[in-house]
Image (cartoon, rainbow, N blue to C red):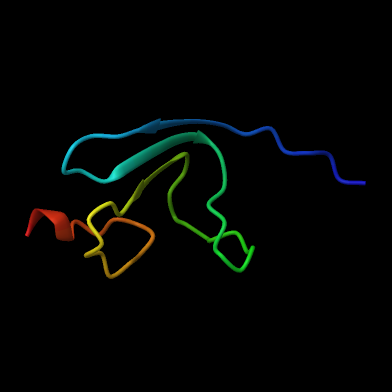
Length: 63
């Protein structure tokens, strides 16, 4: 049996900015698959709805 993975993450919410998640975690899609990222232990999730890379931020909120 697989050992459960320890998850420890900090979520930072800032007005008019993406959601920053840092720590030891995975981003899981609605289909249950882990989304592959090139990020180490930090991701920015889209909070404005404009990103072409959802759920990740692509900077569209700055335009």
